[in-house]
Image 1 (cartoon, rainbow, N blue to C red):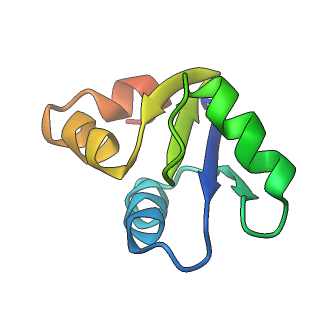
Image 2: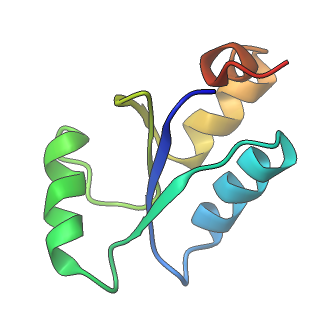
Length: 86
C-alpha cells in the first residue's frame, strides 16, 4: 500500500472530507496537524510548492493537492491505482 501523508487542521471541513474518502477506501495515512505545530505549516508549504491551505496531500511523496484534487482523482477512477488498493 502507498504511503499517504496529509497536512491538516482540526477545524477544516475539507480535511475531514479528504480523510473520510481515504478511510472509506481502507487507506491508512499519517496526519500532520499544522495548528498544533506551526513548523509543520512551513514544511507543508515547501513540499507543496508554496500552497498554504489545508489539506495538502502526498501519496508516496508525490504532491496530489488538496481535497478537491483528491476527489477528482477518485471520480476519474485514478485514485485506487495511486493508492495501490483494489
